[in-house]
Length: 273
Image (cartoon, rainbow, N blue to C red; front, side):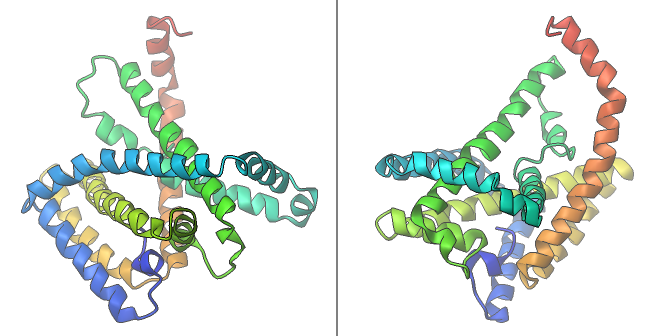
């Protein structure tokens, strides 16, 4: 989703550029208002894809239910392995896990309030409860299912596999040899819808810093970034994402602490504290 090189494991730079151009054209039509029907279709497909992924994942886990307990045991034993902790690899994995979890759920970086702010809820605390469901469904439920499937399949033992290619191989092994095709369709929908969403974030933020009318100019930079990212390596793209998320998280966390008194006040009005 982040980079066509990870998406299809293609070594030819020309193919990566072609995929990037296709995504760029499609995204341009949507964010510049040319194909609103695509947005409607995508917004309808995403919930379907989430449910399909959950059902597919649960089918695989139930089919291998006898291995699930030992898989959980392996996860915890390796996570708290003394040798790993002493050698320093443990803390490196913790940091990687935090970065990926933040990217997955967008927790603490201030992006969620941008679209939750469009809600018609009369109380901010009501929308806050809705917002809390995102990390639970995304990071905890979906990522746990994915992790279990990867370990059960044994694909994680293949040292030359990583990223989405690793997940594709795991689903292929455990779902009748064609689970990777189903997964790649779902990921395509998630990836394209994510491109549309982040454009909206950028326009709103740049419009706030300048004027609402000037916010739309952010899209030109955004479109160029899609093409550039298509020819970069996964490591570079993820590194840029980590830096950007850190730069967003720092001021956002300071703002949360500054506004915490207002949150506590609203919670007291609801008799929650």
